Length: 102
View 1: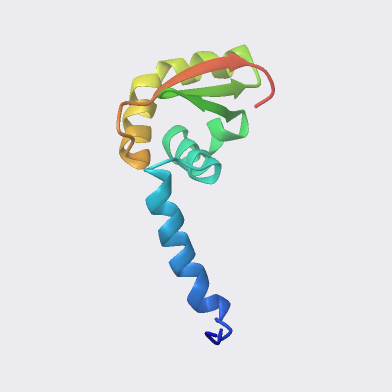
View 2: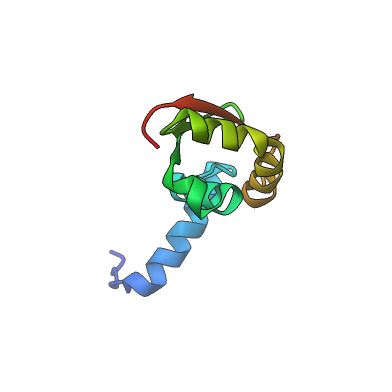
């Protein structure tokens, strides 16, 4: 019978994360999307908007007022370029702005 030795979490966790990352095939996580949104749209715009869903390369963003939807639409191309650089998707990411709570 093989004897099992305890494994330290500090040794186990990095290996588990690497294995999980390999299995996900480049999936993007919510935290990464939120951080990329703030860096792409800017801190002020992020106070009035928040990514809510990512589906088939489209990032849906809830915005708290029509004024901010207008402002974000003016910078949409620039924001999308930054998002694509930060998220490194297999295909391009586009944003869809929706009225709601930011």
